[in-house]
Length: 112
Length: 259
Image (cartoon, rainbow over all chains, first blue to last red; front, side):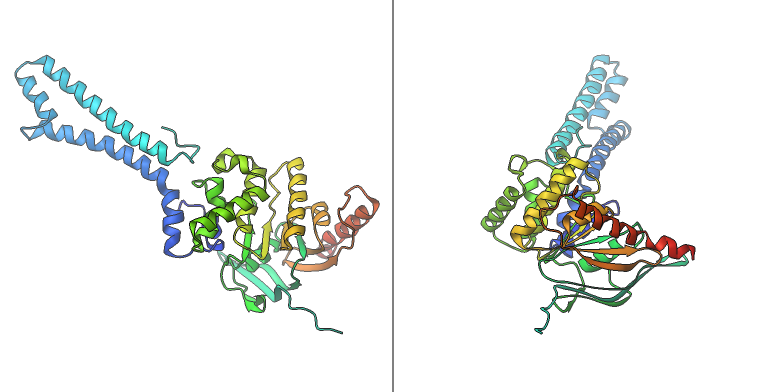
């Protein structure tokens, strides 16, 4: 929030936008690029953590399937599991990017 | 003799100090100035002469440390849509299109959709940006951005337009075009304009009155009324005579410092 150009607050104030309205009309849109970058990073990390979690303690999930297939020497299942993890991660990332690009058309530095 | 009409802006013995770490900076010292409605006033001076500070006090972004700043005889306490500021670096909202930037003020004032649209359309046309109505600021040239900034202030019914070196970042040709357009808008709308610049030529080309300021501490050196006929010709001998006089005043503080 400190990263918002102070001139923009002055511009908003002189145009009659004060107090709480400044949050919705200035701070939030100005923070959008950072919010989306954070969302992408967070999504990647969450995906990584969930698969590791599935591999280590739970009987369900893609990670568990890979671990089971490994103990049963089903290499085909292991590779298939890896492939599905990659694909799902890629697709969910693209969804965030597409939404981000749509909302951040105005930002010259944000075209993922 | 009839009583002088109430000035739109009155600056009475205004001083402004800033604390910078341990030091006190005297940005403005004992400035007095009154501006009549419809006047075009240029504040001119070297950097550090307090011209931007004075403008920011008029806008309500800063409060004077001493003295009073009044608009229509009421103290200026905070920024207000009646006093629009045009910044050197535009300060447009990058996430809004040209239309929405111009509509920001009217929307904030709570006008209805139809009214906002009518106002915006009028001012987009005034500054000739119909073709770029849906563009975002990063897609525009500097001159176009400054046109949007001017339209944004006018769309808000500002009576007083404060301009802080608005054309300083533009190339010479664009600057001349915008100067002409600004004069044209000023003459048609009868606005009051206070324009900060460090170019003597720009000041003489535009202003009814040129207020010369000198630094260390920032103060008003002189207030010069220009009677050159409009449109002004920058190459005419009269123009150059004025330029010589003002140029001398602008540099007068150098001599005093040596003494």
